[in-house]
Image 1 (cartoon, rainbow, N blue to C red):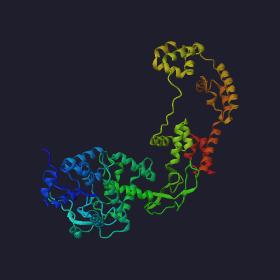
Image 2: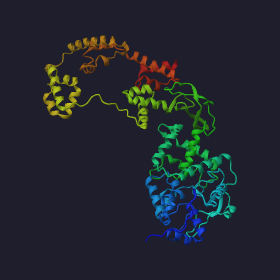
Image 3: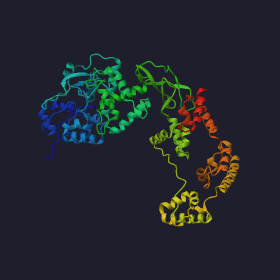
Image 4: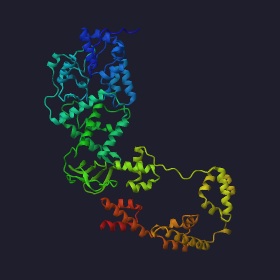
Length: 606
């Protein structure tokens, strides 16, 4: 049976609750509450003052299509669905929409995570005197506004005034409680929701009302809790609330309690030292169990306050100075100049700030420093780092070269490249040759090196041997040369003379092109199988190794040159000298080395 259309429906005003829309319909037609319910919903039912009204699909079908009041418009414009569905997973948001449309609204509070919130909607309907005056001037009528009935809202987001609390209850009503349209008599009986308030607390309450109204006014973004969690953690990292890769939640909790303490008296259910301390873990929300929107709003207001203030909320004593502070970005032209005006204190000990984070507004570089040490920890390398990384990712520069060009570790470079969607993989210059071509090349090389034994031939043709061993091991075993036997062992005296002659020839070639510091044992033994022979036969090749020691740079000279260069780079960049950073810049092994340790100590003492 198709329901007939209603003969009259009032005009829907901006930001009006469905409770107010239904009450004006009942008032204009002078119907009883139950009769109006039967006309609108097809049966007797409860009309919720809080706005989460069910069976709206049936009500939309009863209204003439020319009015444009579809079920989607009724849910999005007359109920707080947009507000509650903004931070739940898409599956729960769709289920809550279906429950409001079909009439199964008893479970909407559990679906949209409303029941778990300690901050409940107002117990009485609220109104704004200036909004009522505007409605009287524009529409010649009064109505209840949706933005005034949200949790934690006691200030009008439009006029920045404290709301009035009416004598009509919004919660704990019986199913047969009638609905009341807003009238002048209700306005005269209303009282202010807050008697007196400080300007700082009023400003925080206004921000809450403004963000709540914005959530109601637009369709929900439906971000999964994991996405919201990543956004919060990234903003906290930029502010310096990190310990390695973790967020220092204790510090965040204490600051939230400090910031929200002035408004605890005006929002029932809000306690910074208890509820907030537990609910601050919205940045680590469990999958499918996102906290209610009011918690997100409070946390966003807190983060915006931290990002805009020059010095942190807590005015604890510190010895970092009053600024400005130097920017230590090694990629910036203004490196070392006093350009930082924003400092964030974020760790206390014995009531005193001992750690601070610094942010350069010109290049975006953020670093953290402890009061008792000059050692810095980079939080964000800034936009210059991102621009340079994009350029290098399009070139053929290896990631090892990027370490020296970007002054960052490989792990930080890979992490940032993954965040920016850049690929650091370089195309391989070698490609797998076909099996038939590999066999032909094997036979050609075997004919040219007929006198070599199996070990020598395999060491000279490693890549070709691996290719054949992977796809044709039987053929390879049948065609390889014979292995060494006791009767045909190598003459090491002759091999030593040949290797010494080869080293002299290569040394002359390299000295004509490079300085002596570039001559190493690896460059002298980089061809054929001589390097493998030499590394395994020190005692059997005394002449060759004596020649290598004479031509190449000693380990002590190498460490002296590399560590001296690392120290000069750190001094040039304004970075305090320390053992760990000097070893990293000089590419010296962290394993204890007496020669390197002596050189480092000499630089630190100087």
